[in-house]
Image (cartoon, rainbow, N blue to C red):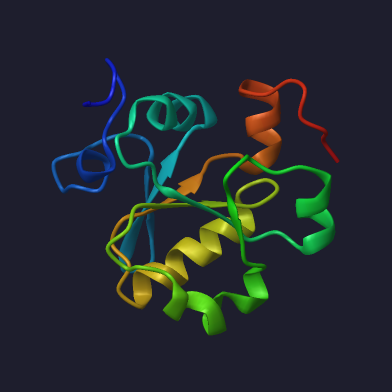
Length: 136
């Protein structure tokens, strides 16, 4: 099933034709972000949902996380990236979107092409999507 109206597939979001304010230039590459609301809609309609990669510390992940997310703390990503599929769609998540942005840049530099940052992180997800999620 294709994404609903106004929701981009990851292939579209990662394509050169996609021109949006969500594309931020960072050094030599571009960083794509997806808003919490867009991610919620995409997860609800995707035939094959992306990997939700949560890079926060274990104590943060224990407080709250998106169901089905995979937890690899940021400092372990360089050792654990071999466990990830560089062709899989990945949304990287942290508290406010800063650490995850660094992980997105790192993954892009080592050949991952379908990687997005969750804009505003888990905090924005709790505000915009899941009001019952604990915050910190």
